[in-house]
Length: 212
Image 1 (tube, rainbow, N blue to C red):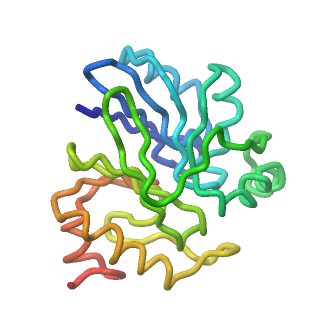
Image 2 (tube, rainbow, N blue to C red):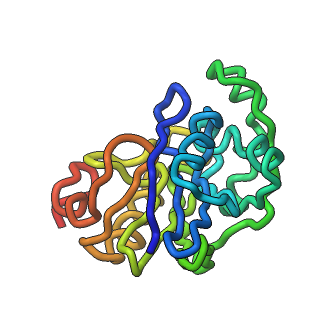
Image 3 (tube, rainbow, N blue to C red):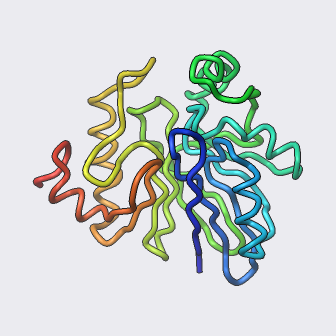
């Protein structure tokens, strides 16, 4: 079974998440945006052996420390979709703009596409391409455990911003309504910021995409 621990990182309080398989105690860090000392302390506290890094999208607060973590522990990087490469390439400039520590670009070990799968220990996660917030945003879904890691596509009571380069509001709404909501009302999700929710709660009550 998949377990999780949320570790807020960076001044943006981004929900970096440690996922691990409780059978094997092998795990993945999802979206290491920064504060690696905090992330690695949680890994040690849980007794997890990291086997990879998973990235939902190429924004600095989600992926800014990816290159450093991958180099430090010799970990492969999986995700996002290749349409986010331009965001990753822009890390040095973004870091200066937002007052982040210096951030290095990276090329994932494996780009991801809709319909792919990734593994965490013995657990298989489905990859769902959900463009809108960024063009290459992906979501990771544990169908058996009814848990999704949705990055900045959907939040409790809100949705992702689209006023970024190559953001697209219509694509975002379509991603949520046509790709996320059909996964099932009982799916709990970890958003990129703020508290967890369920797809059912957002389908019914989210002021931006709810009421259907």
